[in-house]
Length: 441
Image 1 (cartoon, rainbow, N blue to C red):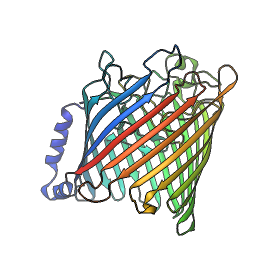
Image 2: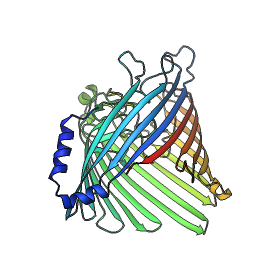
Image 3: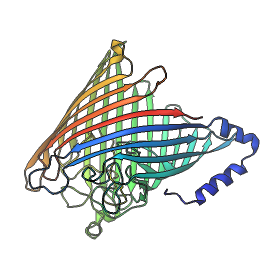
Image 4: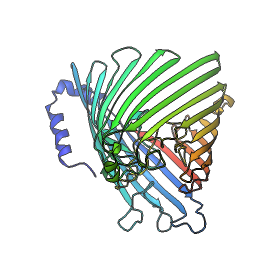
């Protein structure tokens, strides 16, 4: 467990101070679920001849997530507490099958642990249509997305405020200090890919404005101290062509520049640097835009998009992979953030398409399948030339809709990556998950 025992004392003391009349809503509006996830992860790295390292990962584990959300006390200011308890148990993935802590944490000798756990507590305060939270957070924002791509989710520590006082407008702001990786019980500071020095201050603010029923505008700004300042602008528009037809346009633009020590040669030499090729080695300097168009008719959805990363450097967002503590694994708010790679290298131009079919149109609700293909070109190389890569993903999901096992979910993900970038591994990947949520309150 990563929280100190006094956290429990604070929680008990705070609960005892709440008057009995106010406690009623705190308790009666509370909800608790036990979320179960059985996860098999297999990744064949297809190492080139003579390449060092284990060429395959094959791991199987069972996850338990106890998610409790209290109600709010009555009165002008409502108080509440949330708790998130997580346990992972290794079922298979011993010697010869464990490569790093992608899903299961490492023992001191590099082998996989038998089990791992962590606990997160979050205090919350509500006033009118504004809510403040401090503690364990799982943000889902354009400038930061908590990763949930393995057995247990990545979590962050800090504070966040969300306000919906104005109809159609959601304002968000906060400050984060630490992260706990999806394959770890230990928290780490914040950094970027390639950065070995930790920052403990990530400040962000943004707005989502639902201008009309069909049009949403977004703007966010974020600063990771001593690494970068990032601005994001987004637009999502849905055009209803007929009762069962629509065209959705999704436009995204990121501008990311060096901040603090990353903006100086001495700071980059000290470890405040980013990986990848750029105009100035280790310095953060990037513009990335993407346009996505989705045509839906009946159970069919056809998606086509294009993305461009500037020549000046890789796309950058939070990534703690070089800070230790099993913190590897991150997500970014780009469609190209796929199973095997993210298509975010300097100069990369990616064209992608996806076909999705919802079998509810054929009388089989809960069954959805998709096929995705992405091709990236013009990847900037140190040799002065360029390279390319492609990825093909298949997804199949089914959720039982009724009966004793209603809500039981099955998922299969398959990815094939082929890349000409020397530092990239060609990969054939499979993920199988079975999930179920048991309501307790």
